[in-house]
Length: 210
Image (cartoon, rainbow, N blue to C red; front, side, top):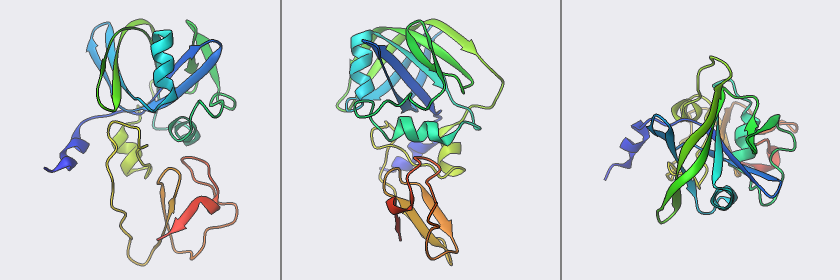
């Protein structure tokens, strides 16, 4: 079975958020689909703290990221847990209809959960749109762009995660972030002391050389 064909399905990069008991939570999702004119479906891993909060609050919001989005947003919401840190501490956001919305986004969709389906690893939430707004005409970030152009990796909790082989470019040294999997290719034998991962923001001590 050639699972590479699954990479040819179209995905975006979104921040899914919700709120319960005055606590804001969120995570990166790439599997979101419009079902009807007023309903969308999202897939959230059981291990994501956000999953349980959506179940409790029965609502969620989707902020659509653009190609120009600050990569620290992906690093914060994709490679950290809301159980451990406040992901919104250094993020510009606003509360709309009692859910947090990422300000630096193309726009948002807010939904009330109307149904859900469980798989072995993920919950598929069906939501009826209660509010939505387009902020600008920037180009949405696709997973293909994030993966191929920005060299970003897929979090293990994402529906599209697959084990990947890491290949070395000839005459280049490759350093891999042990947190998010970002690959940095350079002529240098060592990374600069002030080097930080553009995806998750971790320093050079989190990188290993192939």
